[in-house]
Image (tube, rainbow over all chains, first blue to last red; front, side):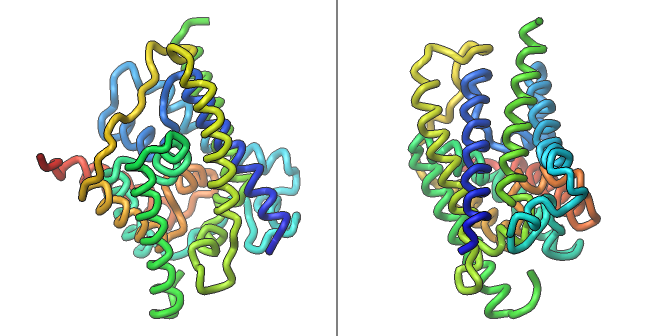
Length: 158
Length: 142
């Protein structure tokens, strides 16, 4: 096991947890990305958009800030410290057709299921919500089965 | 400072912490995420530490925060109230999981990676938005 990657994972996870607690403490909101972004785009809620835009701007600037602080130029902060795979902003795992299909499934799925890894995973599990627990187990199992099929049964692809 | 400005600022800080967390933990690298999901391959446990660290931190955080009467800059905490399981929730989560497994992107890391935009990432984000509109067009039963 890559201890450095695990430690970085834990530190990053704590930052994400603090973000979710912060958003609840200040604005009383769940830090779910599909909810914050999806609601902003599909509903344009009047008087409820500015904080969403600001959150999303912060979300984009996070990796950029890390790259700047890391100082090592683009794409090798994690790799330099012993990571297996690599880059602060890694390359997509496939081409445009695969990503179109994946994007559609992620959008449709998180829309129907009212949340993603952050809303159900980070926030819902912390609230001990039975719906979020069911959703998190379901999307984890579906993702693991998908990767198994793609990598070990079909053999190519991602 | 006006309350609206303060709210916007707080939203930015939350987003920045979130984006930093994703980047520090390596979650903006789809290869690392797929390495976690590939349990039959060279399994990479990183995502377990990320989710575990986030949930435990936030579990403690919510305990402290939610005992207050209202958020610092709002009238009430806006929490989901449903506890029932339905086909829309489980079916949606399953579809999401398939898309996540194909790409290694869930919505947070996909959007947070915009600074390193490429044609496949742009395709992913556009299709994701289409998916959200599509989900809204499918009426909830009952």
